[in-house]
Structure formats: structure tokens, C-alpha cells
Amino acid sequence: MGAAHLLSGDLVAFPTETVYGLGADACNSKAVARIYEVKGRPSDHPLIVHIATMDRMGDWAQEIPEYAIKLARDFWPGPMTLVLMRSELAGDFITGGQGTVGVRVPDHAVALGLLAAFEKVGGKGVAAPSANRFGHVSPTNAAAVVEEIGKYLTKEDLILDGGPCNVGVESTIIDCTGVSPRILRPGAISELMIEECTGLPVLAGNLLTKSAEDIRVSGSLDNHYAPAAKVFLNQSPLPGQGFIADSSIKTPEGVIRLASPNNDEEFARLLYSALRAADAKGLSEVVVTQPIGTGIAIAIRDRLARAAKGR
Ligand code: TXA
Ligand code: MG
Image (cartoon, rainbow, N blue to C red):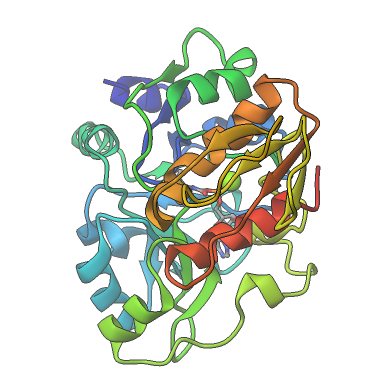
């Protein structure tokens, strides 16, 4: 379901293993323009093209380095986006006028079903940002998609419900245009995994330390991934404040506990819905005790640092 909607230029919100995406035919500039309208996002911010299998990489990209092929083989379908030199198929309305294009094969049965069905009717790929309003927290379930963008969709558009997302934070974005991979946005595919797969060092340039001038990676804007509530990091929560922390940390009297994950993977999975719950409960402040460590904890801290900057 959904391929016909894409073909006729309508939007289809769909689940992936990371977060829900708002999809359009990546070859249809009018349909893609509607993504920007619905999100309220500046149109020079590039979109990720979602494809059914890595065999389709060559449609969208060229001069693909050997290490990118290795990454695709090892981690697709999965929470990883590769930024590659674009082909002619990748229009300016996808790449924000840049010479590169982001591609990804998501690991979710509903997403893969949609992408395969779209391919069957002649589709080349589905452009999809996270299905939230610009700067907001990404949706990790279908209800959150409705909450974010429901009122901006028409009755021809579609929202596919695939339940809660398994990973919960957006894909690792890897710049594959240099001699060695570079992480543009941390995610579930970690630096160590990339180095082990490619045998190459991952170049420095983590977004946590990157200057704000590189707004082309919109997720790198300081004030992204933010709920309406103000987010404070690593403080003692006070009565009336929301609180998100590992289950080993107790909830002080009068504090509203929003999530108690047992490990970093669960932390990532629950984080965005817990931030949403703070807004739903009308809380004005949320305290988060960040997970320490590497792996997906790095992605969690990256998003929380931005959420803490506010809207
Ligand atoms: O997990 C994900 O990646 C989700 C799901 C739906 O696939 N998508 C997602 O898309 O997070 P979006 O648009 O919310 O974030 C993608 C980020 C943006 O910050 C965009 O600027 C960056 O990827 N991006 C896309 N193409 C790029 C390119 N050619 N060069 C640099 N950054 C790019
Ligand atoms: Mg996003």
C-alpha cells in the first residue's frame, strides 16, 4: 500500500527502524516541494533518497568508493545514510543544489514493502525526511506523525502505521566523498563499526564539535530535535519537572518520570516519545541524565545537546 499514492505525486508517511519518514517520489519535484511545505523546512536542505536495495545506489550516485560499497553490504538494510557524489537523476530539489546525494536502505518491513512496490510501478526512489515539523522531535510512532503534520496533509496523502520504531534515533550519516569515511550525524552505526567494516580511519568532524555554518546538514543546526519543554542535562530534577534517566537512577519525590530505560539501545528507542510525553503532560521543564559511553550513546548525547538549546 502507498506506491500508487507516491506515483500520483501524493505524500506517504511511513515507518523505518530509526524514525518515521515523510515520503514523496524522489523524481517528482512538485511532490518533493510539498514535503518542504508540510515540514516548514527551508528548501536548500537536502533530503535522503530511500531505495529498496543497494543495487539501486548507482541510479542516484556515481564515483562510489569501494569503502561505501563495503558499508552498504554490511549495514543495509539498516540505520545508515551514505552521502555520495550525485548522478544526473538526483535533482537540485533533492540535494539542495549540492553535488552530493544521501541514500539509504531502511530496515523495516513496511518501508521495504513500500519501496519495492514503488519500484515495481517504475519508481526510482523515495525522498523522505523525518516526518516532523522543522526543528521538532522526530516521530517514532504513527500517532506522533499525526500530531506533527496531520493537519498539513490532504486526504490523498497516506500515513502507514508500522508501530513504534526499533532504533528510535535517526540514521548515522556518513560522508563518502573523501578518501576515508566521515560521520556527519552519529547514529546506531558507530565509528568503531565503520572502521571495522572498511579498515579505514573515520575522519574527524563529529557534529558535536562542528560549527553551525554547515547548515546544509539541517540536523546539525544547534536548536534541533527540541520539544516545547525546556531540556536540562545532567542536573538533579526538582519536583514538577519531567525526568528521563537510566532505570538504575531513582525518581526523587514529586518528579515526573517519563522513561526508565535499562540500556542505551532502550534509551534511544524511548527518548523521543518521552520528550513528547513531557509536552503532552504540559510540563515546562525536563531533566535528562545522559548515558555515558560510546556506540548509540554518542547519538543520544548529540540529539540531547541540540534539544537542550531549545526551539
Ligand atoms: O533515519 C533517518 O535518516 C530518517 C529516516 C526517515 O530515514 N531520515 C532523516 O531525514 O532523518 P532528515 O531529512 O530529517 O535528516 C537527514 C539529514 C538532514 O540533516 C540533511 O541535511 C542531511 O541528512 N543530508 C541529506 N542529504 C545530504 C547531503 N547530500 N549532504 C549532507 N547532508 C545531507
Ligand atoms: Mg529530521
